[in-house]
Length: 212
Image 1 (tube, helix red, strand yellow):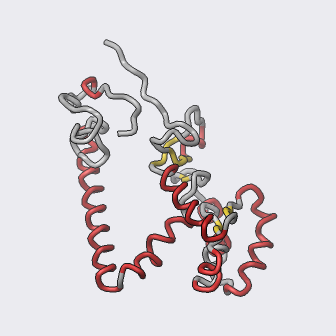
Image 2 (cartoon, one colour):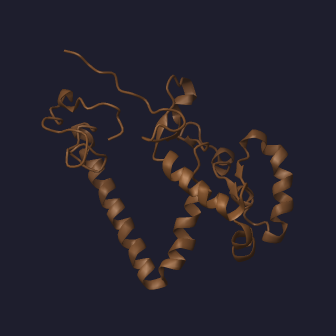
Image 3 (cartoon, rainbow, N blue to C red):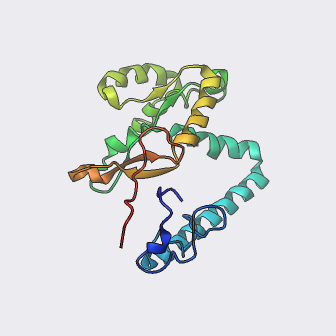
């Protein structure tokens, strides 16, 4: 539970009776009967759980058939190319191809990234915009798009491979769910950012304590 309160008994539909934060308390994002959701949303939580279970099953089978090393390369490492505390997530009213393509980050992975992955980690922003440019021109093209993108170009290149691992740790700590920014107005309500329960970065929204 990341709501910032433990007043689930006050859930209007009575879904919070006898439930509390903490392990075994019945308050989590995977439980269809959790007081975090209205009864009308229960079926969607169940479908989400089913999707997570199917995804985990497929990933396990892929690892068994192709090996965990390939799963790491194909699925786990790419997570870091698209996950960063600074990356916004757009809804249907604000998304465009250009905005969507810019929601990634270039990272430096040293010899591994340059030699084994042909620089796809270090030039991933470019790849989102023009995926047909060959890798041996990717650095040159990346330098060309940086002044065009300006503040919308993201990179984390300090420290080489060690910096890459630090970035993975940072993202796992900072990026736990997405949420609309407090005070957002107009189209700003259709753009969400990563939040976390660790007190890092922008604090998540807090539900006000209701009194009878």
